[in-house]
Length: 280
Ligand code: PAF
Image (cartoon, rainbow, N blue to C red):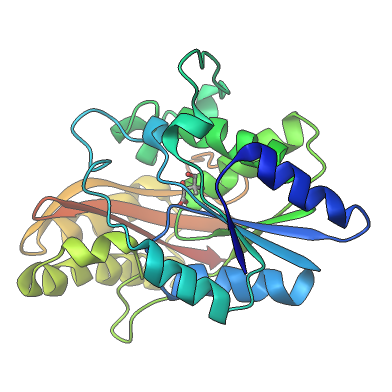
């Protein structure tokens, strides 16, 4: 496995593989089993596997955790290597955003004026911009993203379709701890007590899933019932709870087909997100 730090070096190296399929796993590092599942899937489906490791400043708002975001590049390199990755693309912030950088991928509001988009203004523009840059630099055939960031996945699929980028976007299931907590790089911030309290979000999502499976498809009633439960979970500050159509995040009065129920909470100072896909 090689670690590539510059765009020029990466382009030159990957140009050798013109007739091979390249799979890209975009990450911000501090790998957990969720990331590893993306690498394993890419390894199975592509000739060359590239993982990008870049904590992207443009997707963090003021006062968010860009500076503190957990980093462990040595451990990440070992894990990537043992999961069959061929290259890590690990640019510096300067390499990705030269001083004169002055461009952004602007997204329509229908996918971004809700859920994480309303609590983190500018976040998805930062994601779309860096992911577009990564796609241009690596030119993968397939790119792998976790379903945990459900809104991100819908946004990425949508701009890839709108901009006719020849890349297949593959969403992979959420990997959970034994008790249900979704694996996340940010779980490292949680104290023992907060770790216990964080489970309240998963429990709320399970309640939502049960209610839907039991026939409650009236969206506002569903949201009301689950939010009441979530608001009563000790130690959690609720950012949002939503139930939307999985394909386009629309919010009809009566839900149908594939539904995403999703929430974001704060446990202490850590913001956590999670979701469950339900099909009726
Ligand atoms: O999901 C993430 O880790 C990031 O948002 C991504 C897609 C790597 C872009 O920085």
